Length: 601
Image 1 (cartoon, rainbow, N blue to C red):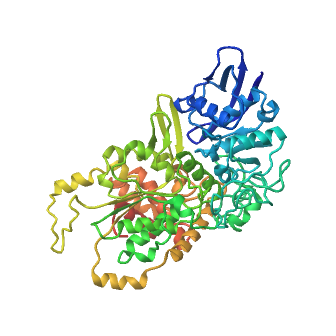
Image 2 (cartoon, rainbow, N blue to C red; image 1 turned 135 degrees about the horizontal axis):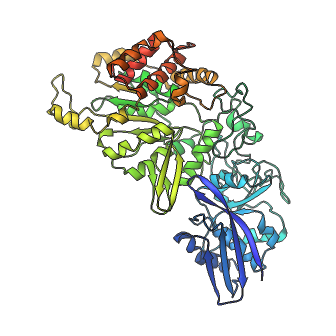
Image 3 (tube, helix red, strand yellow; image 1 turned 120 degrees about the vertical axis):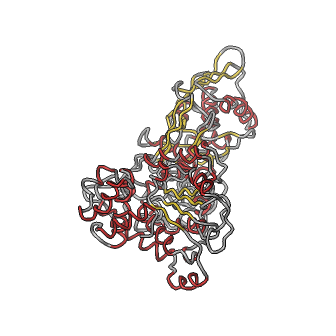
C-alpha cells in the first residue's frame, strides 16, 4: 500500500484551479474519507467510486482510505472529481502504476457501472490544465472529447469507461478507443467515430505513444483555430501587434490544421448545429420586416457598433421581429471571443453535444418573470452564469421590458458599464464576463391599445408614466438609441417593400463598418466603437468642435448627461464608419443625438 497522486481541476465561475488528488490506503477501520473542502455532490463520490470500481471488476481495498484534495482552501464542487479520485485509489492500491496517474489530469463523472459520463465546464478546465506545462495530458469522457480538443497543445484522451482506461494505464500507453459519434463538427463536416484510423488522441493533431493518428475530435481534426490569430475582423495583424491572445486562456491561437473550420479570414464556417448553441433561428431575415425603415436603420447601426437599443411602440409593429433578426447582421465570433462564449456556455451546461464550440453571437431572451439571480447569475452552493453572461459577445433581448421587476432591470446597469458581473455569496465572489448588446422592447402603456386613429386606449397619463417609469432614468441613460416603432398603414407597407434589404446585404455594410473601426482602433484593446472608454473619446477620438456643437448645447440645457454625451459620440463614430467617413461631422453627431433623445434623426 502507498500514497498515489493525480490531478484534476476545480472551477470557480469560468476560472479553473489545479487540484492535486492524493489517496492513501493504510491500516485502520475500513472506510473512505474525503478531505479538502468538498461539497455535498463531491462527498457522494465515495459511493459512486466504490460501485464503479467493484462493477468494473477491480478489488476495493479492505482498509482505511483517505482522499485529500489540495489545496484545501479552494472549494471543490461537482462530480467531475470522480475519475481522479478513482485513479488515485487504484494507484494507491497497486492496480495501476503510481507514475502513470501522477501527470495526467482526470475529468469526468463515474456511473455505477464504471462508464464515464460527461460533465460541465470541460473547456475552461482544460484551458486551466494547459497552463500547468508544455506537455499536458487530459483524460475526459468521450462525450466531452470534442470540446476538450479545442485547446491547443494538450493531449486529449477520450475514455469510454473505467476498465478501458485502466487497461491503457497498465499497458503504459493510450491507444485509440471507439466512442459514440457526437454529431456534426462545428465546421459543418460530418462527425465520425473516435475509433477510426487516421486520428490522434491529441488536440494538436500529433499521434501519442501507441497511437496511429487518432484525435480526440469527432470530425478527425484538431480544434478550430490558427496560430497567432490577430482578433481582427479582416484576419490581418494590427500594426505593432503580433497577435491577440484569448482573455480566457491566454493562448495565441488554436491549431493550424483547423484553418478549414475558420476559413482564410479567421472566421468559422456556419453549420445548422450552431443555431442550437446561439438561440438564433436559421430561417429569419431582415427582409421579413416591412414598414419600419427607421427601426431597420437603427438595427444596422446597433450591429455595426455594438450599441444598445430601446424600441417603443404598440403591439404588432415588429419590435420582436426586429430583435430576432439582429443576430443575422452580426459577424461570426472571432477566435478568442468564441472561446470566451464557449467556456461560459460549457460551465452553464448550455453547450449542445453536437456543437462543441459556439461560433455565432448568442441571442438570449429571458421571460419577464425571470429573477435577478437568473439575469445576473447566482446560486446557493454553485454559482452559475446568468442571462447577461450567457449573452456575452451577443445580444440580450428583454421583450416587454416594463413587465420585468424594477430591481431586475436596474441590475443591468453595472454590467452595461463594466462588461462583467460579480456575484458575491458567503462562500466567495465569482466574476463572469458580460459584454453584450442590450435590446429592450416595450409597449407604451399596459393596455397596449393605440391612442390615435380611433384606438381604444383608456390609460391615463399617470398610468402610462408609472408603466414606463419601471425603466429607470439611469438605465435609459445607458441606452445608445431609442426608437419609436409606430403602426404602418397599408400604403406605407406597400411602398416600403421596394426598399427592404436582406440580412446579407445589410450584414455586408456592417462588416465594412467594423473593418474601418478595427483599422482605427489598431493597437488598442478595443474592437468596436461601443468599447471605447470616455478618456479616449475626449482625446484621441474627439470629433471636431463644429461636430460637437449640437451636443454641447444639449449639455448646457441639461437634456444630455455626461454619460449620454459619451454614448452619442460612440454612435456618431459608427455612423461615420457606415458612411465611409474618416471622422464624424455635424450630420453624424446630430443624427446620433436624435437617436439618443428618441427623436427622428
